[in-house]
Structure formats: C-alpha cells, structure tokens
Length: 180
Image 1 (cartoon, one colour):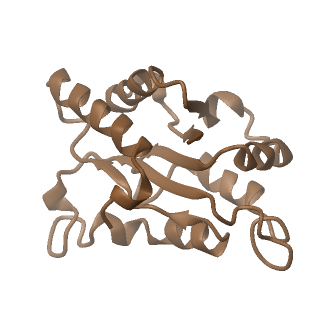
Image 2: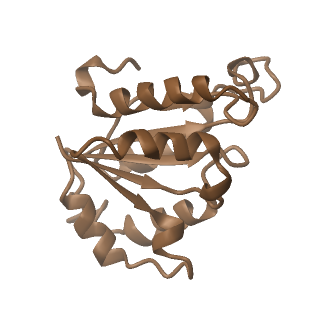
C-alpha cells in the first residue's frame, strides 16, 4: 500500500512529538511525507499538483497538532483549495472514491480532557467530525484517527518513541484491523 503523510504543523522544528513521528515513518519506504508549511511557505497551494498526488496514493494520512479544536490553518486552506467541486465532490467529483484517509493528531491535553464532562466537554472524535464529513463528502473512506494525548507535557522521550512506533504501525495497518 502506498501511503502519503501530509504534515501540517506550523512549528514543526519545535515539536518533539510530530518530529518523532516523522523520524519513525521515514524508516518505511512505502510512506511518502509532505510538509505543507515547508512546501507552501507563502500559502499559495498548487491545487492541481496536490490533486495529482492524492491520485497516486492508496492512503492519505493528515498529521497535525490538534490546534484550537481543529487543524492548523494551512491544512484548512489545503482542504478549501484542493478538494474542489467537480473534482472531489459534486457532479464528476469522484476522483477520491476508494481512497483511505486517516487523521493523526497530537493534543496538549490528556485523554480524560477529551471526553463528555472533561475539560474540553467533547471527545476527540466529536471534534474531528467536520474533517470526517469533508472526507466522506469527497467520497473518501474515513479511517479511525490516531491520537497521542498530552504530547507536549511528556518529558519522557521513551513515551514519544513508543508512540512514534505505534503511529508507524497504525498508519500501515490494514483498514479491517483499525478499530472505530
């Protein structure tokens, strides 16, 4: 399976967790990594190039820090510019049919913060529903998200190393093995 990881982290050089993830997945030849903030520092997204890249992969992983209960702004702009009417949805918009999409995100809060009655009131799955619906509206298959909680507060590099290994295994697992 060909996998493309689209990384959207506005401060990747300071992120211990997302950098650990990238280091781990760089060991896998079937995983291509694209860094949106590096690729488009001026925010002028080449939609046609991005669409052609999407067609070339079986699974697309959207990796980002959970950012004000959503994704970072350049990834939102990527959705707006790339997933267009007539290409990704609407009449003739079936180019992503059969493509698998997965979110891989890191949070500052603990898992207990992301549950009904927790500090954030909602589960991570509830917060990710707009992205899930964007993917399903575009005829893609939405796979269960990979989430690393409390990533920023972990002073223990062993934890992040273990999470990175778990991440690399997760994004390459057959979809039938992923739990909803």
